[in-house]
Length: 101
Figure (tube, rainbow, N blue to C red):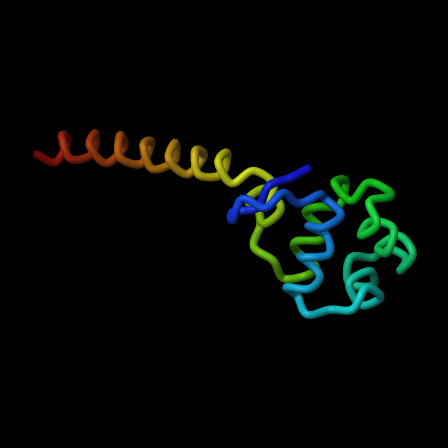
C-alpha cells in the first residue's frame, strides 16, 4: 500500500485512478493518451498488471507534474530529496559568495 500526503493509504491502483481523475479523463481516454488498451487501464485501476512500468508515460500523457507518482507514493522521500537539493544549492552559493568577497 502507498500513503498520500494526507496520510491515507493508497494502492498503486488507487493512484492510477486518482491520476486519471485529476486529469479529468475517462478510462478509455486515459488509456488512449498513454498508448495502452482500455482493458489494460481498467486492469491497472483494479490492481492487475504493472502500471509502475509506465509511470513516466502516465504522468506525461495525463499532464501531471514529473514525479507526481513518486510524491504521492512516498512524500517523505520527496521532501528529503528537496532538502538535499536546497542544501547543495546553499553550499554552491556560499562558495560563490566567498569568491566574490
